[in-house]
Length: 336
Image (tube, rainbow, N blue to C red; front, side, top):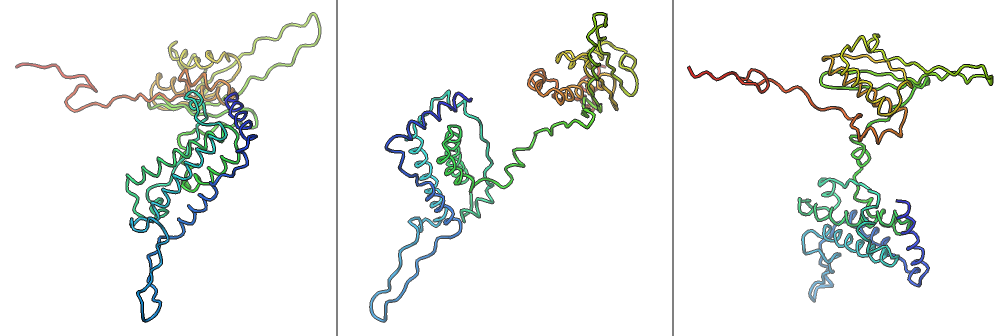
């Protein structure tokens, strides 16, 4: 990504040194026109009499789109199309367009949230149908794509002018909408402990993890003994792991995140489990331990995500159906 950004900036710097660098972009004029169109509606032509004799004079409409009955809408669309054309020419002068397909796919994503149809109705002063809304958002997406190219290339003058136009149509709830589905980071307390919650089926587990205190390094003495291997404890409901989960499969499921990360013997684990059976409780405990390891070792987040250790298992027991023996089992058919 940094190599692509350097190439784009180098291309823009070489193009800016040419004779066309002094030409100013009219994107500021487009933004001013869009703001004026938002605040003022198309006015009807009024007739003014020049006297008792002679025909009355009529002033021309303030907008060429006056007779379309949706002057503000078509004026705004025309200004957006003008902004797209201007941004396209500016990026071509900077030798940033046309961009190869592989370079366009490597650009960082810049998600945005446009205003709703109701908000657009107030801005465009006309009922925003689905077809009109799609037409406007299509133009805005194209303009946002040019902003993404200019921002990645480091062309501040072009990217700022494009963003000043794009920001007029962004929703005020953009940050809240983009933050949906994102997990809050786990914060360690003053003692270095992490608190996470894991779930599986109908079981839940609250997990506390704390690193093992490393012993002091031995004194420089040839007779000094090597430090013993640290011993860790996993307590579940104040009971040792091997006593609470007698089945080896359940214990393997719980210690799997520690084995994948190579952190056996580094953390003490204390957990409280509720609900479900041994399979659900062991799965919930493994889920909570995985989230706790990621909190202590952020570099392992990608590895755990690929191994699906931090993902909550969505499988639940299927309900029993009427007329069935169980969820899917049917009664034996008897002819007589």
